[in-house]
Length: 238
Image (cartoon, rainbow, N blue to C red):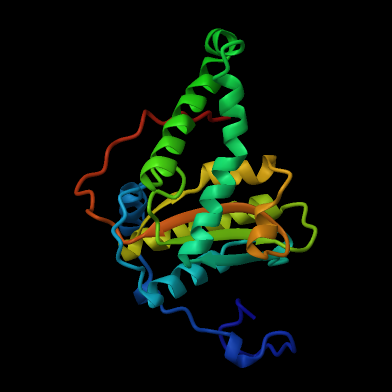
């Protein structure tokens, strides 16, 4: 159906209203595509202004159109914009990590962690500061960082490639957000907490399935005028 230029093929699963001609004049050039990729960055400086509904719709469609293994299209989405549900995500994540922080900070174990697990102890310090800001000042300085929306990407049916498909969906959503001028970042702490916690975030939010990826986003306080080169590319040619 996608390859036939004359619409001569008829298939019951693909009615005419689902077949669309590609307007090549609206496609980005290679240079434009690369510039979008170059300027894309994790921008965590959100304003309180909500993301326009039309932007949310475009971000969701971009995520939904990502490729999936065997074209099974098992990826589903939960868009969280209500403040009480955003707070549930923050609380869940903090409650997952704080027991570890308290263990690492104990007088008995602190010297061991600092000497033999310095990277883990660094995260303990980071989360201790997150908790202090959140509990004492009501400021989320590390989990969602004031984002007005979160897109959670999940699968409800068993899927051998649910995680991989979800990461591809995130990448599509991320680039669409960038093109719309929406600030966003990958919710790494939340995703890791989902994988570790016995009490599931899915249950707290009423999601039927398993969360694999997430994106926090909102309208930016400011835009970055420059992009910075990455370290030199490493390529093995064989």
